[in-house]
Image (tube, rainbow, N blue to C red):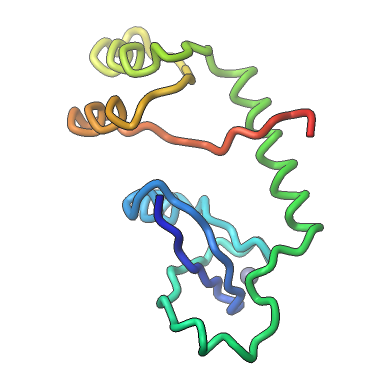
Length: 139
Ligand SMILES: [Zn+2]
């Protein structure tokens, strides 16, 4: 996991975690990274500045709760969407993904779990998995 300080075109700064640096690039290209304050998708990696230079600026990195709940709601909606439109294959994900990848006739949406090793193996074969945050619906 890599933590980046991100900055939007309205100069909001916030922190976000990514599984690796290419994940950030991928999400950025698809405009899937939103500023947590103003929902701008023009988000860039901010230079990692020494902590002392932020000393006088107040609470820039704290998430305000309105946005926090909005994001959480969006993530829960995304989960519901996936559950409704994708077939759950559990830990068989990597083999099912291969089946679909190599046999185009079976094209369908699936979701499940894959280990980091499985993901790396798939990546070597040119198959990219998307990882989405999976929130509990009832909290
Ligand atoms: Zn912003």
